Structure formats: structure tokens, C-alpha cells
Image (cartoon, rainbow, N blue to C red):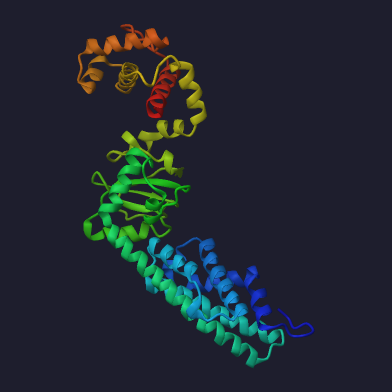
Length: 369
């Protein structure tokens, strides 16, 4: 900013700086540089923090507000967000204060260049300083309150919510509960499953993995979580699998997330799950004669899916379902009578595409009702 004509008011100067993307980026870099914890956050998230604080300070200056009477809801929300992301109070304050100091330097530099008298700059900075102190107190208060709530919900609460979401889906879970645990109802999340770490390391690993938000806990003796961003690294002695990001309603893992699996074990299911519209067409074409409300039809579909899952072996299917092989044979024959397939005669073999079509149709039909 160069001096042109009449010197601007302090408020105009601050308004111009708050709207200057280069200034915002410079303040954000200072905030990130002074806090390794905050530096791990996405750059856009730190820019949002800077814009929020600059805009709030400008509003207080223009309205001549007493900081004691100001509503600091946004500042408290910022503190709560950082707590949910695993940022410590020290890391958060280091970031906020470094950003504030850099902003003051820029105000002085650009103000002098614009011809604003030093006494005017000093008076304006003192006003903003009183407000900035109140903002920092609100940020810390929001962080402390969120920390107490996170501690109150504890590992057991996280595990209960994760178990419901991963094994059953979000049905029956309120938006308030999701938000309390750091999840957005409309967000997309990577599903994470891995080996459970040593209890002494759990807290540190939790802070590392949820620094971008999300939810992490232990489900069925496995590390499990929902993360908005894929983690960059994990400890070398842990095996952790991460699925592509999906909305919460598609995160329910059912059979798939019980126990530790190789990514390649889930390659087929992952690829097919990415084509829900095609699955619906296939389900209608092959299983349109089945009635979801008919328990016997569901039994037929369950048996056929188990038969395909067990290599079309009657004996293994019967053992898995705890029934006699003749029962499996009867149900498969009845399914063929109702739907026209799959072929179940002794010695009959389906082609690979036929098996995939029937497996996909049966799985999506059972999961959909």
C-alpha cells in the first residue's frame, strides 16, 4: 500500500488489509510458522482463522464496542474446533499471537506508507489490542469447554458412536451427537481400521490422526475411525487401512469392517460399491421377483449369497449357515424357480461375469432392505 493523496482513516486501512489476500496469507503463514500443531492443518483452515479474527477486530473498531459486551461466539467456536482437531491450548495461543503480531507489523508498515500519523496508528492499535485480548480469552474458553466435553464423552462414548456408525449406519443418531463428537452430518469421511496400539500410545495416536477433525476409537478390539482427511503417516509398527471418503450414510461397514482385512480383500466390494445406480439396475433385473417383506425370500437370497461366497460348495455353505446341504440345495432351487437363476444343478458352472452379477445383485438387495 503506497501513499496516494489524502491519508486514509485507520478503519479504512484495516478494512483494506483484511480484504487483501496477500496480507491474509502472510498473517496465516506467521500463525502456522509459530505453531507446529497448527501448521499441520490445511492452509485454508488457518486462513479462515485469520479472516475471522481480522473481520471481528474491524467490526469492533468501527462500532466502538466495549470488548466486555461483545459476543465472542465465533472465537469460542474456533477454540472448540481446534480442541476437536487435537490442537493444544499452547499451540493454539502460539498461532493466534504470532498471527496478531504479524498483523500489527503490517498495519504499522502500511499505515505509515499511507501517511497515517503515528499517534493515530497507536490509538487504533491500542483499541484493537484490548479487543484482541478479549478474543484470545474467548478462544481459550471455547477450547477448554470443548476439551472438558471431549473428556466427559471419553473413549467409551466415542467407541459407542463409532460402533453404531460403522456397523449399522447413522440411522437413529442425531446431528447434535455427531457434532459433539466432531463429525458433520453432511461430511464425507475416510473409514479407518487398524491394529489397536498399546494403551500408553493411544492418546498420542488419537491426537495425531484427528488433527483435521473426525472421530477415532476402538471397535471390536481394533483401531477404527472416521476422518475427513486421509492421514499422512502412521507409526511403522501399526497396520492401518483407509477407505475412500464417503458420506456417513454409506460408511456402514457391516461384515466388511469386522477384524483386520487387506485392502486387496475388499477390492471387489470397493469397486462395486462405487456404482450404486448400476447396482440398482442389476438388482431390479435379476431379483425383481423377490419381495423384501417376504422373510422366505430373504432367506433364499441369504443362502444364495453364502453359496457364492463359499465357492458354490454346498457342504461349506451348509456349514456356514448351520443347515443340512439338502436345505441349501432346496433353497437354491426355489430361488431359481422364482428369479430364473443362478444355475444350481449338479456339475453346473457359471461364468465369472454371471457370478459377479448375481453376487452383486444379491449383496445390494440384502443391504438395501
